[in-house]
Figure 1 (cartoon, rainbow, N blue to C red):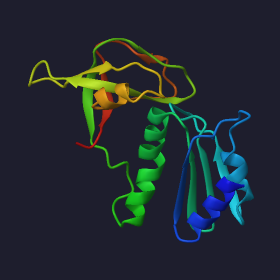
Figure 2: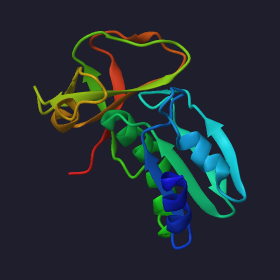
Figure 3: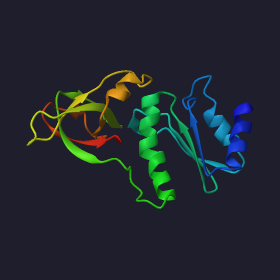
Length: 178
């Protein structure tokens, strides 16, 4: 009830509500229940077909956007860039896009992926030859850890219908802001 009261108080003044954590389906995950208890709230989605970020909750209360971001920092960041940031840009009168510069890079190793979810792999970019696209090297680590995120230059996008990318193929990378 404390979380519910805090959300009601925030929505009395704000146009958007972001909650981080508690968006899965475990015993201690209360975000969905709280968002559903808000007056006139409407659940739009619980779970999105991306990795990381699957347990995301999208809801609204009239014209107000309600987001239940995953608790792990890398997952929350990906969801923020894919869903929250474009909405913030729209509200600010900017183009409704990710606001991340897409570039072409070459995979430095094979990167596996599961079919059915669009995957966003944290990568470090290495420029070996100025005449060639940079090499994208995956930075592995749990999505709850901050260190792999800090080392990353951007997110390499793997299509939801792909089983991954072979070494040496061209791929799209969304650069993080400087």
